[in-house]
Length: 485
Ligand code: SF4
Ligand code: FE
Image (cartoon, rainbow, N blue to C red; front, side, top):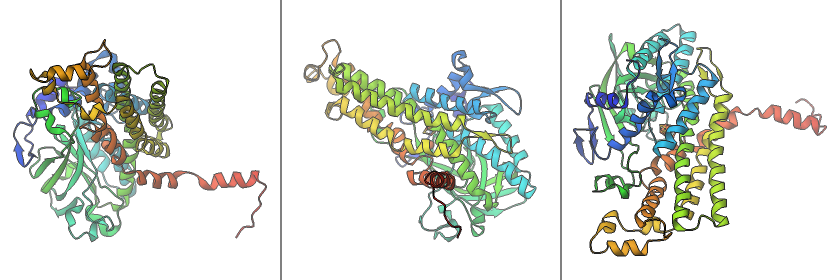
């Protein structure tokens, strides 16, 4: 069974025994929990679309290991065409869900590991790549969703892992045994963690020799003994507990994040992909980050939804013909397509690594993500401008339905006579959701900090541009002949 249907995916999650906490209590039924369920629905769409002939080309690929048709989210990129399709897949899913669909982190983790395990073996004569590919085949055969987990809590930012007052600030080895290792630590901000079958751990920063106990990578079933998930809050999250779906804005989909704690967890050797090879921690971080910075084509997809909502709000408000409104929508589209351009460009300019895996152009992936840290905020600002203040002051769905005051809500919030007040309120709630509510976590703050905060990309841009070449040509054209020092 190389590909699951959405329903099979949902059923498979029910078999997991995850230890999840939310609002201080254990969540017994994770799949049907009203706050978590919309995020499961978004991942489920990655399975359903792969079954749809219309999306087959983007959503599926041929495994380079088994030759079988697999979901692209479990695929190792074999060409720049694969990378471009990955970008398009992300935009497609963002544009259909209006939220983070969570499955990219696992895809980005397996691709980065396919490269780095090979590179470690080349240097040290180890067998990580073989071990990793056996694991990957298992992931592909079962069509798993994996949480690619990189971000450690990091403790005191001025100190490396080995100097932290609390050694658990970064995930580390606490015991080495004949049959495997025991690890402790945590991963923060984990997107889609409780919708995943597997969790793949990677280090979060470059390391030095003294940090080698922290230079580890491994994979575990999501419900392995000793793993606990603590759900993150999202702005307006408890609206999902209310009667009626209108005030949620997005009535179907959502995302989630959680803190994942590893309390003395055993990892068998066949699932360990890096063990104290501290020299390669930085490379794994950079490759994962570059792939994930490409993945932010999802934001162009979510931008599509926000632009569609803004145009609709303009029509419902009766201002769609105003030239400044039209111009704002053009600007939103310009910014949104520029986001997409960066992701397409780094994919199209990708290249083959010694392992055979195709990696994005890392300079362009960083430029792509740098734009993502800014443009969604401007698109959101313009959407709020067009929506008007009612977006944040209008009464609830319950008031609209109230036998006492519903008539006033209806009467006073009517704008375009051809549109019901309810529909006007619905589209404004969606804009609220995307720019201030649960989806703003993914569309705005995650755009800022996900896959590395803005400064991380600026460092990479500075490192990767060929400044010497630019200067050389500039000086030549200016007729400058410098004495060699
Ligand atoms: Fe994928 Fe985007 Fe969510 Fe990251 S934020 S997991 S790239 S959908
Ligand atoms: Fe992310």
